[in-house]
Length: 532
View 1 (cartoon, helix red, strand yellow):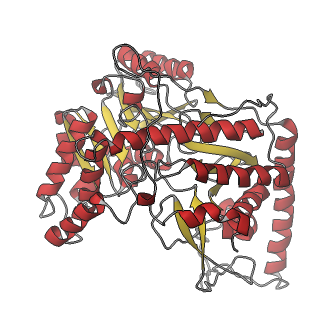
View 2 (view 1 turned 135 degrees about the vertical axis):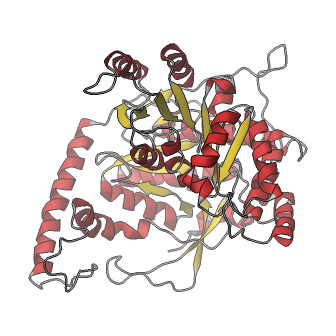
View 3 (view 1 turned 90 degrees about the horizontal axis):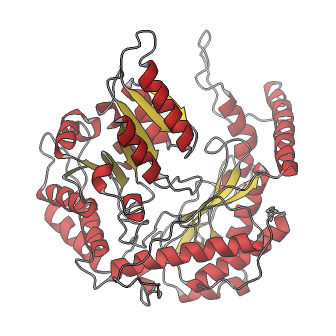
C-alpha cells in the first residue's frame, strides 16, 4: 500500500500535526448593521435510496448468506480450516456467542476487516501516518512490516484541529504533568479531586452559560452511567431512533419505560408526548413521574442536526425535561462554538441537561453533564462514573481547559474563532463539491459529519482501499452500526484541513466514484464553481 507520485504533493508539504496548518484569513461574511453575523440555518438532505441499488443490496446479502452457510458447512465437516475461536470441553453448555452477529462477522466482516481497526502512529491531525498491515489468510490475522503510509486524515473527529503535539496548549499540558503526574488513582468521592477539576468544571459551566457542570473521564460513560441517575422505574424516556449506543444503554440501565420516536420527526414526538400524558403508565394509568426527551445535537452517522427550537417548544408545552447530547456539536457548531444551542441562538436554560464529550473538538478525553446546580449536585451523588471510576487525569483536564479558553477567545488572539470559521467553510465547500459530483450525501449542509452513501457492503471495502492507496484515510461504516441497507463512508471535516488538502481528497474521491459506480444521485448536477 503506497501513494502514487501525483497524489503525494500535498502530503509532502504538510507536517504531521495540526500546527502546520495556518488558521489565518477568516472568510468575509455578510455582517448586519449591528455587527452580528446573520445565522443561516442549513437544511437536512436525505435523498431516497435508488430502487435498483436497494434491490442489489438485498440480493448481495442473500448471496453472502448462501455462501456463508456453505462455508460454515465446509468448516463443520473439515473441508475448510476453522480460524474462529471455538469453545472446547463445554458439553452441555449453551454457546456463548452463537448468533447472527457472529455469522456476519465470520463471513461478511472478516473478508473486509483490513478496512477497519486501522492502527496509526502519529498525531491524528490533518495528515496522518497509517501503520501498514499485510495478511496471507484473508484478514484473519495481520503482520506489520514496519512501514507506514502517510495520508490526508478524513476520518478523525478532530473538528477544531486541537489534536496537536506542539504549541502553547501542549506546553500547558506538559506543565500539568510535571505538577500533578499522569493519573489520580482515586475517584472524585475519595482522594481524586484536584484543583484543576474544579477549575475545569467552572470554566465549562461558564462556557455553556449554565449554573454548574460535572465532568467524568469517559465520554461513553457520561451517557450510560448518568441517565440512570435521572430516570428510574415509573419515568418515561422519549428517545430519537438514531440516538448513539451510549444513550441507548443509559436508557436501558435506568429501568424507565422507553419509547422511540422517528428521527427528527416533531409530529411523531408530539404524538407520543400527548399519548403519554393522556394515557399515563401502562395498566395503572397513573401519571408518569417524569418525562425526559433525549436527542443528539449532531447525529454522528447521519450528519443531521436536531430540530432543537421545535423540540424546546414541545418540552415547554408538555412540561417534559430535555437532555441534549452535544458530543459532535460542542465546539463544532454555532458562531462561537457552543454547540447547537448556540447554532440556533437559544437560551441555554431552555435545555435541562447539556451533555458533551471532550474527545472531539477539544482533542482530549472524557465528557460533561451541565445544567442547574441542583441537578448537577444530585448527579454527583448518583453517577456511577463520578462515584466509582477514577477521576479524569490532570493532563487531560488541562488540555480541555487550554482549548476551551482558546475557543472562548480568552487566549490565542482570536485563533479559536478562526478555527470555528475555517471548519464551517471547509464543511460547506466539501459537501457542495461532493453533491456536484453526483454522490448521495446525507445530513445537514452545516454538519461537519459527511456521510457518502455506498449501500453495498462490498463497496465499503472498495472505496476505503481505493482511497487509502491514493493517500486519503476515511472510515467505512456498515451493519450493525447502520441499517443493513445503508452502508456508507463517513468523512469528518476539520479546521486543520487546507483547501489544497480538500481538493486533493475530492479529486481522489471523484475518481473512486467513477471507478466504483458510486455517483447515484438522480438530482440535476450544477456546473457553477463552488467558492471556498
